[in-house]
Image (cartoon, rainbow, N blue to C red):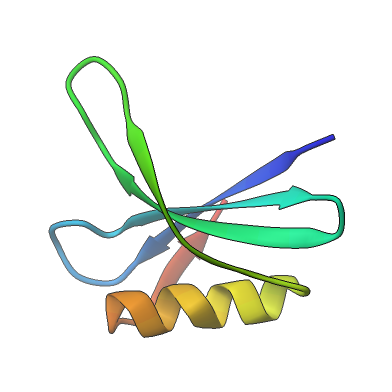
Length: 68
């Protein structure tokens, strides 16, 4: 069963990410918000939530603002 976490990084623009847990792996995605639907771009996967958050921080170049 997949569990999703919404991650917002500081700053404007493309600051929305998502982490999905599946089969013991945490998959990190950048979310492009669209008018009708959103699209996800994979940025990597990790064995822990902390490592997935580090992937997002590295990709965005910004600190995590909110995890929901």
